[in-house]
Image (cartoon, rainbow, N blue to C red; front, side):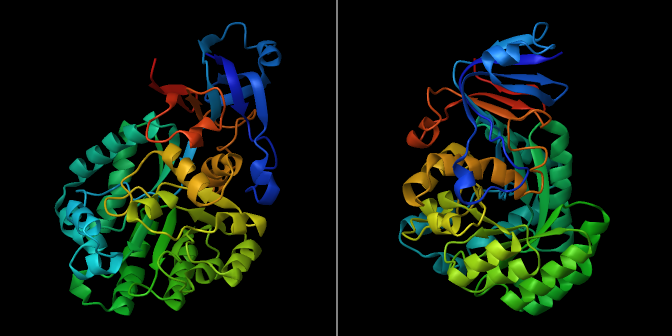
Length: 416
């Protein structure tokens, strides 16, 4: 049965080209006041002024849902580490006492500290835990997330994490796209030999994940003490050869060359981008690689340095926003907070931030042709917020303003 969502104070359609938005296009939100959205069979049939949508042939018999608020595309969170066994509370205490990222790693914390618990956790429990976390995303207006492995760092545990994503998908309407991040760090048994471990990933883990179709993307952490730019390019090219789309963690802690390495390998996105220079920005623009910014992570780590969003946008690079939800450096699943951090700390406008969290987030996952905008023919992924003006989503922070979440035409999170 068709559903007519009506009495919408403001609708952000993001109508426009079917491509990542860059420059001034990130501020073109397709605003419609006093609007309605008609959904049928999981697809948007009509969206626009309420009177016009009401004249659609399906509108009269449609189930009517009065929504006294703001409607926009469901958030697309294109960078999460949502599979993990335990929160890293020891890391949190050390950081609160003044320890740096590198000092926490040296003390046995960081990525490595998650390995033991992940390796020991049964697949069924891991999947159930992920499905429970998925509800948190839905209640905040997120309809699609990317989910990385990367806390197992062995053949069995990395594949187990990816299988857990597949299993959890059976129990939640939240759409989850899996990423193999076996090249996240060097596990203890390889005694710091990054090249030897990466050779193991290429020979054993990558082919099996690809053959079993457990992942859509392959990612790597390019940073001092982890993997070099040369290793990054070679690894991502091999991943692409096996059918996995490349992504890269780059320029998070320093300017190391990971962004250019990822761009050279055809990465769909380069994530973090805190320390990008002019040559990195040019490489992103020329390659069409999306810069995915994660300002909630910078906030949580207490960093003074945030990614130069306004410079990236001015130079024509498509910018996406994501949570970076993970147990150590960003335990945040609410994209509404990310919008606020982007506006207050990255000099993004509310329009740019919402575009980055919807349209460009979808393109950072290769699904922009079906998600990220509220236009006829698109997947009916919608989020409705208790607000009079869309700018309130970034203006207020610390609470969830979401009223209603719709995934593929189904109401999956009501709050009234």
